[in-house]
Amino acid sequence: MSRASDVLDACKARGLMVATAESCTGGMVAAALTDIPGSSAVVERGFVTYTNDAKREMLGVSAESLDAHGAVSEPVAREMAEGALSHSHAQIAVAITGIAGPGGSEFKPEGRVCFGLAREGAETLVETVEFGALGRDKVREAACDHALALLLSAAQA
Image (cartoon, rainbow, N blue to C red; front, side, top):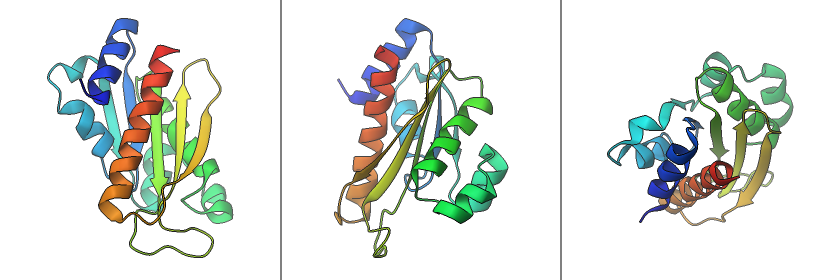
């Protein structure tokens, strides 16, 4: 059984709906969940917010956070997750923003991905994972898998 199936089962068992807010993964988390029949019982909506404008307009991420920290940062991941929760009917939202590659910079290297996990009635969790310069496809796959693990953990809490 896949991790996405486990997320769906755990959410169904608790009556939880999920929203995603994705940047570098471009909808991969939502796709992994909706590839499974019956996912409509759990997946409420997904936001693909690749640009800063999209993050501001669709999720309410503040220009101040983007200017001060950049899109690939824990403050922005937090605002993305909280924005997905407040702009949906979901009870759990995961956000992903990172540098999939190729490239990066001295300050934001390839493979750095920031995650946010918002849940109704709980403090929003944020973390940064350094996947390393694995190549674009592998960074995106690893980020998607990590986001699913965060959703599963939240659904089982």
